[in-house]
Length: 336
Ligand code: NAD
Ligand code: SER
Image 1 (cartoon, rainbow, N blue to C red):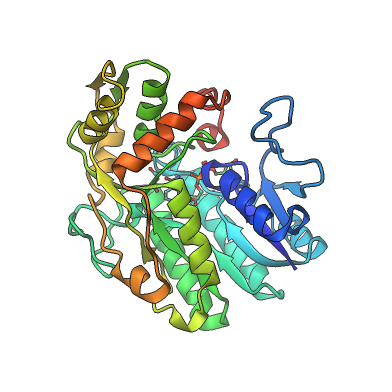
Image 2 (cartoon, protein in one colour):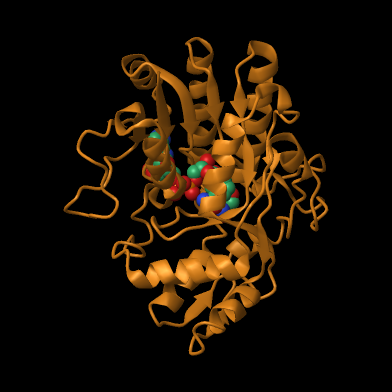
């Protein structure tokens, strides 16, 4: 049985597919996205090998997805295709459609086939202005203010319903903002941190679209991938949370990230010009409590802010030439 990853060209999908192919073999992992994967000519470091299975499809297209699941004999699914917070606020109708219809289609097809497990990521966007901001509990007020957050909380409830009602083994994490250097991020509010590191690595200054003291939960991609796989490997009986697990890693503000960068790049300077994404960020937690994930399935992130900054700057300087070359609006998440 093969593994299907939707949103396979995205920030998380592109790295998750790589790791799953190392674990299970290239032919065992099928990528799916709206567009074909990068080619060796376009982006040599991101191009999958020529025998890597890949399907171009829209996750809202039930017939196309059913065909992919059957043809590849899919036994587990990582459903990542989505619009993110900032893009979702620009295109709320499309965000609802892609995020909700896509998820419901995947869950319906999975429950009527021999699919053993489904992974679907939620987000800190499920929280809102009346949620406790510090050390946000696993079970607390969930009052999202963005369409993205509304789809994430609705999606969590849908996943839990399919588990209870149909015994479908759906598992989920509430990712915080993810930092990575291999693929440009796709229209999120937490993208400022990647943008800042990218500019600093290139010897440029940065103007941040959030206020300097806007502290948010964040995580380095290796921890996110490790956590995702640990959750999927866990014994089903150990999982007490079936909507979505809080997972914390880092918690920092733009001015703290800038100071950490300046310790390594003294010439770097950051200025601030908050835009509409400030409103999204200030309704999210500054840190989350992830005790349930630690207890149930051994969640244990490795990277602190220093280690993340050092690793990101090293890799960005080494030059993944395509990083940062995706112009705003070019990424599907941003054009949608
Ligand atoms: P991304 O925007 O980088 O990638 C999403 C991918 O989905 C893109 O390649 C896009 O082309 C594809 N896609 C969009 N609409 C589609 C459709 N209708 N059919 C098929 N493919 C479609 O996003 P990401 O950062 O990799 O996020 C993946 C998942 O993780 C999303 O569900 C997101 O909400 C969640 N998440 C991400 C973060 C983060 O910081 N990156 C944080 C919390 C949760
Ligand atoms: N990083 C994501 C965003 O900013 C959080 O889900 O949209």
